[in-house]
Length: 478
Image (tube, rainbow, N blue to C red; front, top):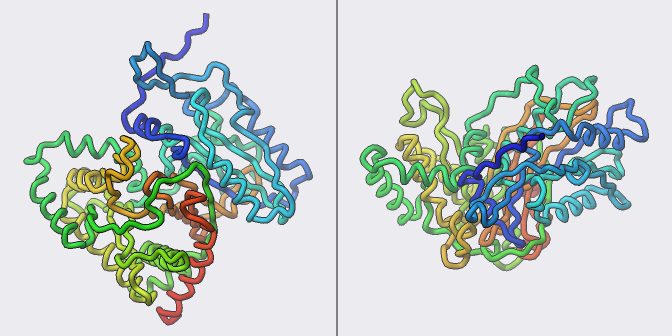
């Protein structure tokens, strides 16, 4: 007699993402990877990859076998249960682009795939191997529910199966048990990676921290007064009270549009060196300038600057973190994007000052205060979708902009060279645009995910981003 795994209750953060889901608001994250075929690839290379990825259906990691369920017997509580009729070919699919096979057709396919909800009756993930690009490249689009993993963990899962050896073959897919090779040592994670991963759990974890620690132990009264006073004065902090309402901050539909492009990190580094700013400051200034142009084009630019929630990490020495504890403090800065400034140099200075003020505010707090204040600052945005209170609770920021470091060196999968890596994220009601960036092998890949109706012609933002980096170079005298 076969003993089935005992169902286990779903933890509160994961349950929150599951319960916040609706037809118009799917709660999965995704990724698009582009590969160049190896020189010895035959005409059936993609079919062979698909067969390799779907072989060994009984050797799938437990994470990729579980799905949520609830019933009268569970008193409405959500549980994880293993799929006893797991069908790997439902989850892993082989697609081909229509002619002429441009990147445009690829992004349109990813937009449609990202628009549909995952079926709760099955494990909450899909992977699509895509051929038909005119230049011969191969793409893989994956999506996985945020209730299973956060976006950063999903990206790391994908990376864990890649190799720096172009001659390695018979490599497993990310969902296979044998994909977790002990010989592979991932590159060290920067503080921002820990920040992004930590912020994924803020909907419940940080709020529990804020509520579970006494005010005396955390020093919350002083920290709260300091943060609130900054918010009232419209200064950068972990909390914002001055985000203007824009065309992005409305209820969304189910349709998504995805746009992606990368730029050499060296260009951003050169701008930063010439202006005394960080690469992340330059990324935010690029986004601020592009969004400003986009909103002007739609006659929708507010007078006040837009506010972005930016996850950051502070090293132990930069916060009140005892040296014995090590690690990083995780927090979020509500950064003003300088969209009220017409000059690109002024926008960059506004972003630079905003981020510096926000980091300085976090440095003055203990790790518990950082976590708690970041949670309190985000609570209106998080509680709206979870409690169906859109339009009642006003979001403290206009959009999320994340910048997550990826591999610094070239990677391969079964001889195919990874040449592009772009994240897809989650628009929510009241926040129709999300920008997530990840670095890879000298390039910064921008992934823009938006509601197709609320953010029309989203791909125009790519042109404006390109214009903005050129404008920043000119302003910096490069």
